[in-house]
Image (cartoon, rainbow, N blue to C red):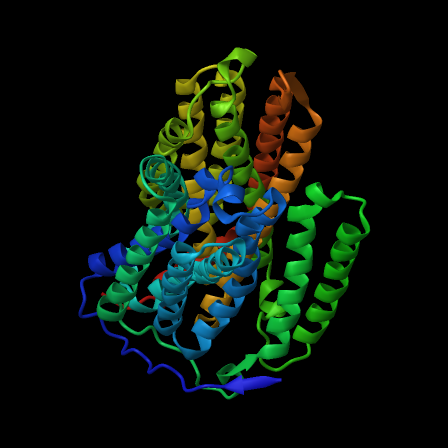
Length: 491
């Protein structure tokens, strides 16, 4: 089943009238704005049941629904961007962020809040679409650094969101958070509409002008079953009929989806392209690195906030915790241009492997330095530097290995792999910390051993990601870098 829409006009292959710096700035700020939505409600988690007049279990869906809708919408928006224009779909995603933020700001109960958060999750496709559009509209000499900066924006927004949201929540109404988010998203809509030129949409052949509705529905059902089972398994019980049924269903549906995608003329995701060594290994590395990256986002904030009376907690408030974590996002932004230069000199494969190795070193540093806030800050900056290197290299490997007509879909699928990795990380680390606890008065808290085990697990997984990156064929990695340079708009 396919549908056909009019394509966005092809952009002329000439340097954009808007300065490249302005384009990079707008798309990077768009990425930061989208990623802010993920951490926006973290300071409110404990208060959500009271705010919304519901149970803690129901309130948890405010977090879960964003994960689910982002996972489903990201590959769909990427494919639609390839078919009908990346700028057009970026505007759709930014509009979803505006609408979701407004709905949340006006919400008086849990159902509207869940709907609004779902719309915010649907806007997360803005980031891979922006990365893909850069290949079409930027000069070759700007492309590597621009991709790295846009990729780093995911971490920057998440890191900055914590202290900003905590400060607003402590000193003003929680609704101000969402009105502020709506204003930022609306500004992004205006900037994209006025400053970003239309990226070329390759619709020269009939099949690429049709959208795979069956593939989108199948992938959506499979992902919802998988991520819902993984994210809620700890609450429902890993052996419960609901959890087991969801996980088994996800396997069955995704296998059937893959069978269908291999046999349709215009698939949502071209699995034959995805099976190419560079693309396949990069996606595997993305999944593993997503796991490694997110583990420290789960462990270190808790360690910072646990009461100092435990002997290992650092007794920081939510706002203080956010301030100690925030430099990590800035480190990603500072390191990403260096990663682009390294990719140009040695190939993105080396940058990806080095980034994963640095992440592993950061975890080991956290194990040694976890007794002080400054030690945690050092570990956060090391991990973030590694993420900045790796996240900039992954889109370069992907886009250099797929046709220009599929860059949006391929980048979105790569982003999806990172999201699956973070979901698995949340489940596994959650189990580790839940099983290794200590009693602190009437409350059971994760123990020091549990934190150390989680950090060592993160270090080991990051090393696996480095190994996967080194398995990417050397010649193919270099060819990917050269392909991006040659495909970009000439200066």
